[in-house]
Length: 139
Image 1 (cartoon, rainbow, N blue to C red):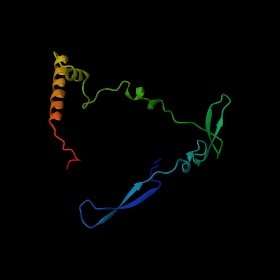
Image 2: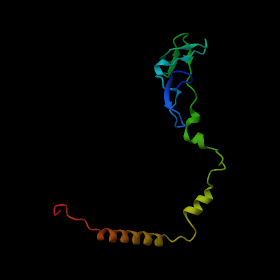
Image 3: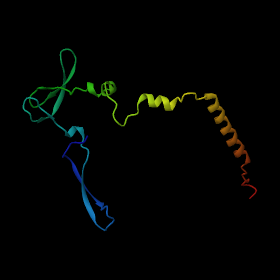
Image 4: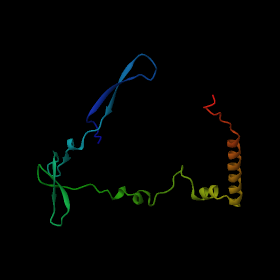
């Protein structure tokens, strides 16, 4: 898990100008989830958590510092349907009618396309038959 401003690593790399200089680059490195504390909703300070169950059997997160419930974030907007539902096509999107026109050209004869493919395969096999491989045992 990446946390902004935490676990910064410094790495020396060659300069882009192909000169004998090196520069130091700062990069965020991952940190294990066990080293991250959640914010306690009552005290607004970092707190470790423990898990517990409500009367209806639902599993919840509980702050160890104050015992307050820490709700999980709403992730219903993360589904594919919610991300794409009602999305308007942008300037770089291909219009559906253009896709259909290029995929199924009017008057395209699919039997002709199959015949062209069969002819291509026939020519390929004919050329492969003309190839001569010397027997390695005779050399």
